[in-house]
Structure formats: structure tokens, C-alpha cells
Length: 172
Image (tube, rainbow, N blue to C red):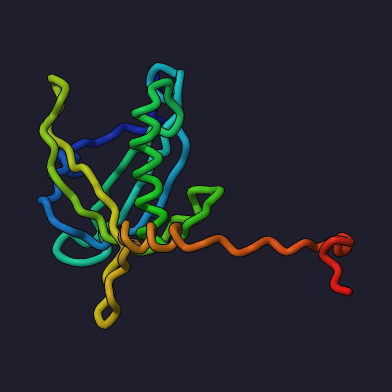
């Protein structure tokens, strides 16, 4: 039992309402809070993300995501790592040690509505992260497979010895 210390008058406070899903669309967002949390079974951990919508009709609305980074299922971990990689690419922060390095960096979120997979729960928003496209700037493009294979098929540079020249290589 918890004593409030005073009488709470519910008529003086507007009751909370269920939050409606954001309609499927691309939104400019930024991560405003994050933390590692234990999974329900206590066997793993997920990165919990809180994001704010920065522009448009839904400016100020919150979105949430969970990246299951520590799990016994390798497929689950791979999905979470790919999502974290997408966030890093979207924010331009390619190597991070702490999730706070991703905070307050605008990026694009492709928001979709996914029907519930579990009875008793309603549909939920799912997020895909993309770099923010700026007017006048060309969109960021990943290198094509052809460019990668052309780069890798180029001959490797010849290694030059760094020590003293062996006698058979010396010119007379």
C-alpha cells in the first residue's frame, strides 16, 4: 500500500489517453534518450531508444525502438546490429562506444505500421533509419558492387623491404 500524503482529486487532472500510432511516412527524428535494459527473461539485453519527431504535423511526438543486442539467438542479434548500423550510417557516426554519441543527431525514420503478432496487443510502429537528405546536397550513396569489385581486383602494391638490402639485391 502507498500513502499519497494528500488526497488525489482525479476530477482535477485530465485522464491519460492511448497514444495513436503515427501514420506510415518518413519523419525527421533524433534520439533523445537511450539505455541498455535487461530482457524480460533476464538472459539478454536490449538497447532502448526514445526518439522525437522534429518536423511536420507530428512534431514533438515520441517514437520508441528496441535493439536486442545481447541474445542467445544469433539471428535476433544480427537484426539488432544491422539496425544499429543503419542508425550509425544515418547519423554519420560510424564508430561509437556509447549510445549517447547518437543522441540529438537528426536523421530520417521510415515509419511503418506492423500488425500485432501477439494476442492482446495492438499494431505497432516499426522504424527503418535513413540518412537525412538535405536540399542541394546529393543523397549519400553506398558504393556499388561494381565499384567494390573494381577496387578489390586492382593489383596490390608491391611490398618494399624496410630493413637492410640483402646482398643479392645490391647493385654493383
